[in-house]
Image 1 (cartoon, rainbow, N blue to C red):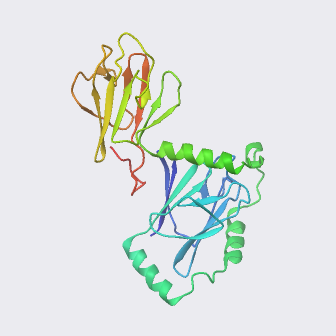
Image 2: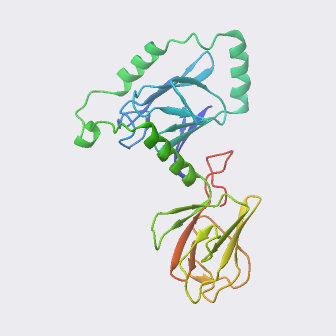
Image 3: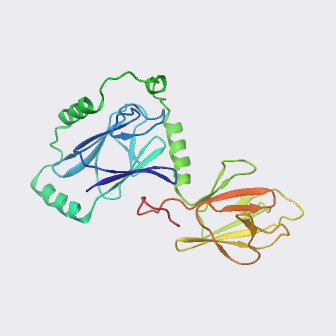
Length: 269
């Protein structure tokens, strides 16, 4: 059975089986896939199946739907496709059995001859009872410019990938770990520059990516490196999701990010 995994940054919020042929995605609490953010319209998109092929269609008219990084109005979904709606990402997955069945159905049918209006109207009638809404639920969707949308998409993409997030100075700042070797220190050429101090080395620590692991090593500086409150000395430390890293007064948390192939699990567990 096809599934949708809902993610927010590196966090998996929900796994939803597509047990119906038509599902509404939106901010309304009665939506089949509920996304609670003012960037999301109350009825933002519809995911539906026709002739064995799954589609997603933008209903928002405001902040749009991006499939595999491209803005779409209506688009077929294939295994491992990603759809970005506001700050959320939806990952579409299918079993091998369903993929084989869909290929056979697609050979026999024209997938574009769909009855979208009928399916959407039926879904809306079924899901939205017209009950009184709270003040928050009735708020208008925040419409953003193209530049604002792209900026938010870039920020959320950083959060989906392995990174350090500052929990001390500059709290919330994201430092992507997108190189094989990430240097941390007070030298301006370091990838992550921290404040100078008598105990901070120019190249104080390094994080190396090795396959699916990230390895932290203390290089120089009297302050050393602490992970989860314990000094690691000169030993290599394999980072795990949520590890707290301290270098002097600088504090970070390691976020392993989503597996690039299977968004239902972390890169590192």
